[in-house]
Image (cartoon, rainbow, N blue to C red; front, side, top):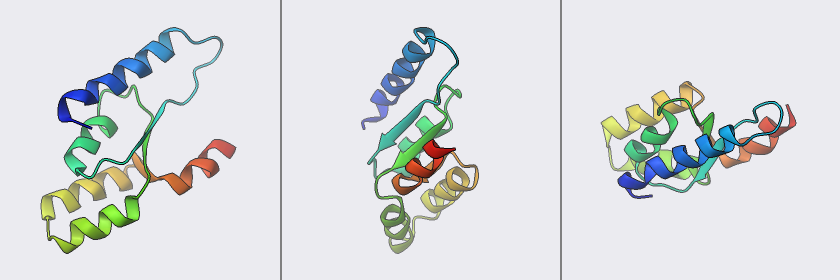
Length: 97
């Protein structure tokens, strides 16, 4: 995902919200983005997106730790602890609730 494309996900979410029938569904994004800053632009955005699911979150956390990118590691911590970024394996469980 290019940094200038993060707005596309939000625009799509707003379109879904505007055109919904009945109650509002949860709006999520499934990503494979390797840059925590770009994930943060989606996950911490304006609240249009409820959660971002990453297809390889544990591998991303390991890679960030290995390259000792403290700022990226801190950003991932904020996103994960705030329940704004989750691993794709959490999606089925979240849908069941």
